[in-house]
Amino acid sequence: VQLQASGGGLVQAGGSLRVSCSASGRRFSIYAMGWFRQAPGKEREFVAAISRDGGNTYYADSVKGRFAVSRDKVKNTGYLQMNSLKPEDSAVYYCAADRSIITSQLMSAQDYDYWGQGTLVTVSS
Image (tube, helix red, strand yellow):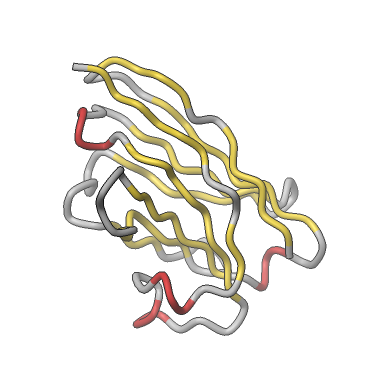
């Protein structure tokens, strides 16, 4: 599967932004999907994940209550809706997918086989 992330940009603190991850190549519904981010000088960190059927979602504590992950099976696209953005949310956001990943692995970047190219989100104070 090939992943294409989009939707990043510049937004003021307190604002909202939705990033998308378009999948092509194989049936996306059989892949669990995760979102990660990496700020300059920092390691890539888990943000959110969604199960194959979309019925279960998982969030990092730092974004819980502000971000929402979803997926559209018809459009083969995943979304990360980001609200109440803070300057510390600034980073390159990556989507990832994996067919065989299990729940306990969803927060681990090394367990995903497929990655999008990343989209930059900048939150100004």
